[in-house]
Image 1 (cartoon, rainbow, N blue to C red):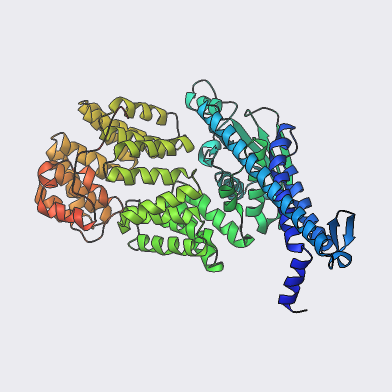
Image 2 (image 1 turned 60 degrees about the horizontal axis):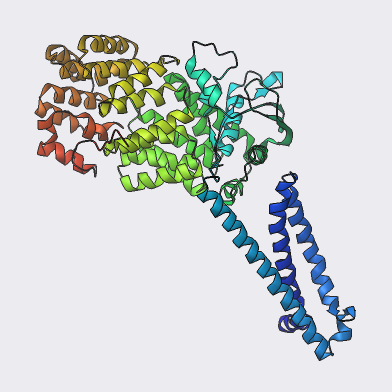
Length: 595
């Protein structure tokens, strides 16, 4: 039978209208079920089961409608009524009534639901649900993997990443949730407050046997309480991302959250991983979170090996890109680190346009080196859409905003980073620096006090405290703090202590520090520090000379906000440097303390 003849036969037998009628009735049933079933605490999968049943029923209905027609005498074989014109017209009218009636009921339901939701909204009863969640590091059951910290942290962060796609959840970073303890003493108010304000705690165990994973997940409402929900999952290691997506979906439903379609889309199309490559990725990411240069180099080696083994793995590329960005922040970054970061970020996005890490790395590249500010803003927003819980992305965007003087927005974004990873000194100490910029010294010192309760090995908190005290006029105390931390971290000697000596009129001591830079091999970081010190000393010519050094450090764009010498800021040579970065000329901060 030719297609045109077949199609005509479908119409003649009322099959097409029967399908439309079936779909219309099914739509009404699903709408009613979505309202009624939750009211009776039906299982979360009830709607899915109904949709599956109706989908299977459609197949049988198509066959039934080909063979039978509904007539005043009941169901009769279609061949027996095809020649009865009046009967065919009646059948056609009945189907039209079913379709129109179903659509009418569906529209009434939609209008009723919308009216109800609108009245709830007007009455203030439709408050947005938002939960604070801490995913505790999962434990390994196998003794052979017990010491594989990279697996424990990496796999746990995999769940955090998938949970972060749910808009209603604020998921703590593992750097902070891993420090939470039910044994926190009264002396650590920071940790006690965090435990009190966390709504849910997620714990679990992982058992790995060759390529198989057996994972037990528990949901608690208190850090040391009994589980209110738990489930066991089994999957091949290659499907780890799919497994975590299932866990995230189930956990969301256990918390009473209906996952939005736009959030669920981010879980669709997740591809399997190559176990060997994924383990290299996890090792690299773990080592990049450590403190020493040797660990960083080993981490980068693992990530480079991952991209070599699996050039089509977007996460290997995005991890490598962020590693390059981190290296670019150091005092002695490799000369080609930022171009490599750009290439890796672009490759990650090309391979997977939903890769939040890739978009974040692209944003960070253009913030610190590429200087395409419009693209940076787009990439920041895209990364936050895909994963709103990446604390480090909010941190970098905060400094992007500060670069343009948008201080209210910058502070708010920094506070978001702090909220997501409250025990990371970086997110709190540098927030104090933003408060210093706008003269909110008491607020800055409050943040510094929080840092004292953390493991601040880099001296971030003391760095900010020293600078704030100097701005407050407590010069001797502030300089002593900066001098002390300069012995811990030599970079602070040139970035903070030297400029502060010049700022407070200690030109002779400041000159000794800048002489160290003059006599050392030129580096992007050293050149930037020398320029800042000379600017504070009032030597505009030397400041410009150092700023014109060909290689630029990642912090170079912030000369727009860190240079305080008004004469230098209005120097045509300085303005030329600013404009070469596509930045607006220096201007006062935009800040409203009451906003």
